[in-house]
Amino acid sequence: MKYIGKVYRIFYGDLSYVGSTINLKERMRNHIRKKDCSSKEIICFDDYEVEILAEIYYVENQHDINLRNLEREYMEQYVCINKRRAFLSKEEKKEYQKSDKYKEYHKEYEKSDKRKEYQKKYQKSDKRKDYQKEYRKSDKRKDYQKEYKKSDKYKEYQKEYYLKNKAT
Image (cartoon, rainbow, N blue to C red; front, side, top):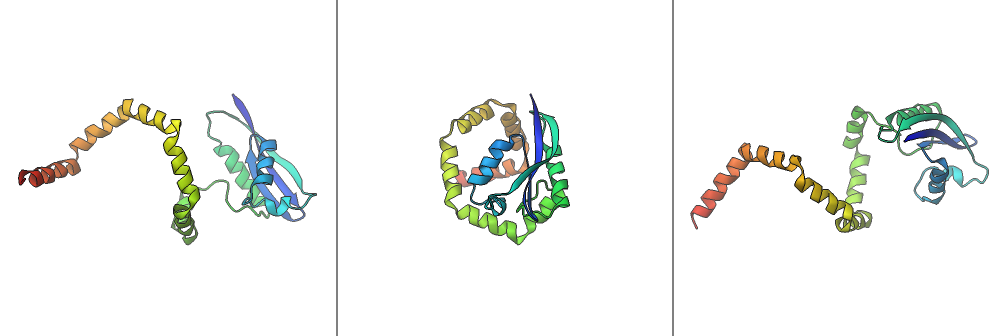
């Protein structure tokens, strides 16, 4: 199935928010509903405008990296209020992960109820159970076990276990 990805701009005066989506109508609903989206700074004005900057075709299984790159190009053309970049290169991602802002965010996230709720929901989900069944059946698990048993770490563990239990 082919999709049309759209890069869009929400703007009011000099304020701009640039984003991308395959369903602009649904995405705009999310902008309006979400409390923490930076686009709220523009949407709060009743006479904001939305313009489609570009359209790009891609296939369902194809990663939308081209769409994200295009979005980023447009973000650099306008003065944007976006909190996050559309796409980070590996170097930029590493640099960001070293930053205090990233560390602080993850500290807060670890403590948050949102994370705990997600984990509870995931633990109960069929998706998790299906994944576990598939993993148990897969060759990945068997290959991992073979490699682990060949490793020095496993041999060291066996020695320690033997010596510990020999005395008892």
